[in-house]
Amino acid sequence: MLNNSLDFRQLYMPVQPTVRNSADSVLYAECLPEEPLLNYIYCYWELKTCQVLEAPFTYRVVADGCIDIYFDLTDPKESFIMGFCKKYTEFPLENQFHYVGIRFLPAMFPMLFKINALDLSNRWESLDLVLPKTAKFLANQISNTATLAQIKLDLDHYFEKFISKHAIELDSRLLAAVSIILQNSGVLNVEKDLDVGVSARQLRRLFEYYIGDSAKTFSQVIRFQNILRAKPSQQSLRQNKLFFDAGYFDQAHFIKEFKNFYGVTPSKAFGR
Image 1: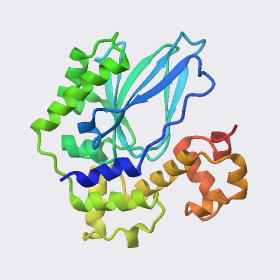
Image 2: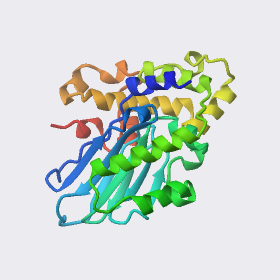
Image 3: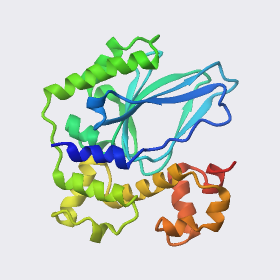
């Protein structure tokens, strides 16, 4: 049933910017879940200070089409969920912190937990209001002294057990539409190219439930993410007309959309 969902992982690797300026003081790391979970969870991640910072830290999360659960490892009762976001989000943190998160592949969180992704879009919420059992597990079973490797084992066990006890179903038409978008790196005509046997209204409802926004917005995020992964140089940005190849009308359109998803201009994001 879920064979096609494996294509999501093969076709899409969401990128979050590496931590700059405080590289010696702030660490961001990712690790993979065990094989049975690879269809659902893109990665587990960790964001922590290696020493007390001289000032509070602002962490920027760029649009990536995913839904994340995250928690404060120093107090795992503090857990949250962040839905699909159509622009970047900045989190003001203290001068010392340690967060761990679970990043679900597009469409997989609503499929697993039968929760409408649209209800979570463009915001974060306390996890106990959305998934009280999972929030309770994190609060009671995750040690605040555990390493990411140890936490991974606990999370793998929890989600593998959850999946074994629940019927997992995903609309094949949604799967097909998302696969088309990923295969085309988000560069397509949504009205013409997503011919998966449903009306435009039905398709919008599917995307709102499983993704959290329209197919058009999701495609724009995928297009942006593919540019991030390509890591173009400033020279190639100027000379190769990357924005035309990626389906943008002109450079101004490219810069405006990129800044909306990232928070800074392409030249600043890819500056060397």
